[in-house]
Amino acid sequence: MKIPEGLHAFVWRDPTANNANTYLISGSEKVLIDPGHNHLFGNVKDHLSKLSITPQDIDLVILTHGHPDHVEAVRAFVNSRALIALHETEMDFIKTLAPHYGAAMGIKDFQPQILLREGALLLGDMKFQVIHAPGHSPGSICLYWPQEKALFTGDVIFYQGIGRTDLPGGDGQALKESIRRLSELDVEHLLPGHGETVSGGALVKKNFSEVPTSLVSVYLSRERRAWSEEQTARSKMESRRLTADGRPPKEGQRKMPQATTELI
Ligand SMILES: [Zn+2]
Image 1 (cartoon, protein in one colour):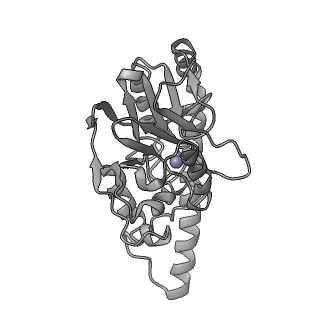
Image 2 (cartoon, helix red, strand yellow; image 1 turned 45 degrees about the vertical axis):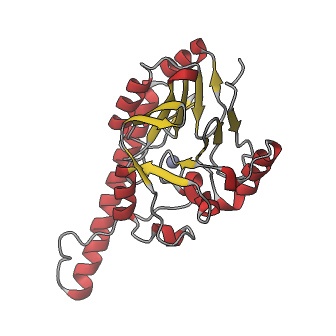
């Protein structure tokens, strides 16, 4: 099935580097979804240049969520006219988790100009629907384009897979509910943040129905295991502190885990 006119999928196929798929919507506005890792952005630039487009021509960069493999190349747009959009919950979460997130990514004072919420998003003559889809991360979004029945899913659901929930802010039950909501949409093109795209209503439906519930269960048990391992590690650390200075650690001193660059 043909991908709609004006929609370009730059699918990342090199298995040696964890990088996100990037999508370009080239209509009355030029919208780039998830520019990916900064050091791999040359790949996106090459794709754009084949369409006679440069990063300076992009009007809006939409980030499906805040993991570096999707976001980092916003650096390429710092001095351009492009606005950056991210869900407000994701931005709050990033600020809590990693106050110096922008600096760590090489973007001083990283602050999207647009904080998204669930609802309609009008871009020129194009109408989209922002869907808040937590689970992989608290402020993950999916972007639905009803006119083309296209759904950009970030790391919520892939071809034959679902997003991880064992990273900071992951929540298996929330992911399950997000996927259930998405499965009710009329979708011809499933455009995930990693791996192959899926085109054809029947195939998309099949993918939704075959995303095994058991897979979500595996993730839930992984979350529980990660949590119990963390508890064990913490109690070992606290008992060491107790013997080191003779006093129990104060409540709330535990640091939030740091984000890594290996996130998908
Ligand atoms: Zn991710």
